[in-house]
Image 1 (cartoon, rainbow, N blue to C red):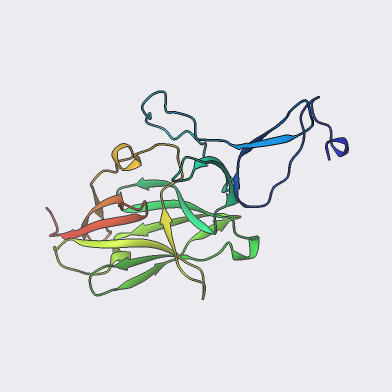
Image 2 (cartoon, helix red, strand yellow):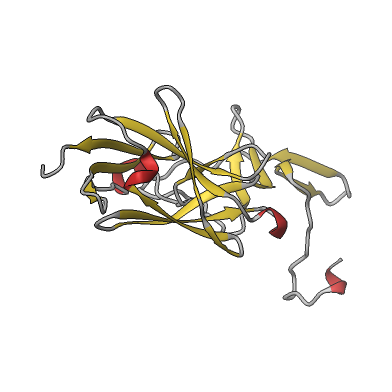
Length: 221
């Protein structure tokens, strides 16, 4: 009801629940008969650029113009589920500091620890995280990866929240079309207090989740 809120002249407020809403246009002729026509997707005037046409919303909701296989235009409304998102990753001399946040979760659920899961033999190690509201900070040290040989290991990074299903910690949502080609992370060496050396390379998997490539090095190399 446009009269219930203050809106500019000629603008009507329309509240729609989540879902896909087909778009049509209605014309009324001089005899009062209504004619409805489905709206089709607009023709592509230029090649797609490096960014997506629809913006990424901080609150996890989305409102997108999409098209069906037949070209029918739709408005898609909704909200993403609970997600863990990487905010920043800092690599120091002796540890990696991971900062992330939990999206679309109530305040009581904003707790947990970072879990490193080794793909070979499925070894899992928990690293405590410090929470500030819906954001968390977790320092990861050489010892958190355990004592393994010089063979390269791959660790998937997840957020463990008690008995709830673990969440993969994913790259920050962005409107960049090919983030794998843009956001690249370096190889670095970490040194523990006992002299242990670890080569580490954070990277994003094809689906956008955070992982580490690691290998222990002989002391002094």
